[in-house]
Amino acid sequence: MKVKSKTQKPLPGDQRGGDRMADLQRREMELKRAEEAFREKERYYQSLLSNLHEDILVIDRDRRITDAYSSYVISMGYRREDVIGRHCYEICHGYREPCEANGQDCLLDEVLLTGKERRFQHEHIHADGSKRWIDVLLSPLNGKRGSAKHVIQVTRDVTDFIRVKNALQESQERYALTTKAGQVGVWDWNLESNEIYLDPNLKAMLGYADHEIRNHLDDWSKFVHPDDMAEVMAKANAHLEGLAPLYEVVHRMLHKDGSIRWFLARGRAIRDADGKPYRVLGTDTDITERKRAEDEREILRKRLEESLTKILSGFINICAKCKKIRNDRGDWIRIEEYIRSRTGADFSHGLCPQCIKELYPEYEKA
Image (tube, rainbow, N blue to C red; front, side):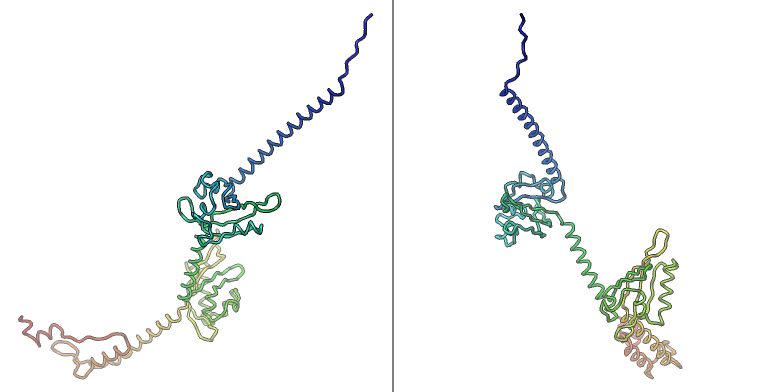
């Protein structure tokens, strides 16, 4: 008689052991995936930080650099191993002692104490010894309990910007001094809106403050002498129509005190691709004193011409022998006196070679 065999069932303990093993394996795989994801994120952020335009240092409370990203190392001329563990004041400023000992404020302690960011600009020393202007942002790096243990220093080299800014400022100062000394003002005329930028110095030349004259052609035109307006507009239109290479005209303007000032106006149109003008840039120069001097010279020239004509009219005594003007009636003395009193000319009196021969023949023989 055959005994029918029965399938043996696993014991409850064995089943629990298998489940725990599978669970451990599952957890191990999840941990590995998490670690890989973490490393991937770390590589991502490391790459991101290394490719930022800003340079980054991590500095502890002792002012030692605990981390530095490649962008800082490259931009300041160091290798990473050159800066890690060294004091920030050594690397940034070339000091052997903290900044305070060298008469320079340091905001690192303030950021650690207050937990607030600070931003400023100052000079850093490049590895080659040159000075670079740096824009600095200090931010606290808080620990688990909220207190800052480190400071993140984010910097950007702004040397070129500072140089351009300083050069621009110097240029503006030179321009201001030049225009003020030379009585020159700049204007910028928008042909579409008829708005015109007027240099405050230009308004001041007519005795007005900047706010007293609106930057519009209608307002500025009111100060052009009425008798000169037609010529001013004719010269402007000739240039805008391409008939003249430059807008240039001398005209009078009305000063706030009621006087008349002479101006030399010059400008050039800016045109689009089709040659249509849309803007005119130019200058106005106060030439009142020059104009007065020119007018005075012209008046003196005419007076001199008229006076000489009167003086030299009629008979002029000339020696029949030597053909020189005779002065027995004082004609030449009067001419000298008149010219000397009305001009800067003066006269020197000496003997001509012919008279020397006649008066001092012994010199000729010698």
